[in-house]
Image 1: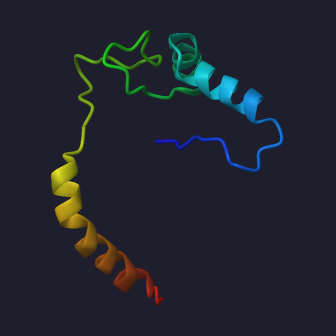
Image 2 (image 1 turned 90 degrees about the horizontal axis):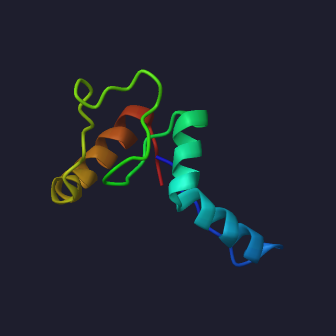
Length: 86
């Protein structure tokens, strides 16, 4: 997954907003899928990446409530494995 946005200090915020609008449009989503192989969060994707068959490949959609319950233990485990100290 990718994150996108426009910072408050963007020099060309209008251009950035136009670009984000295009990225989220059907045309932009189609381009991202065809050229970059990205998947989309659209309910009805305009196209699929080459070789992707939705009848064969099942996309896993996480359960947000389950994520919230597991998040703290995942972070604790990650920190322990990698020796992260705050």
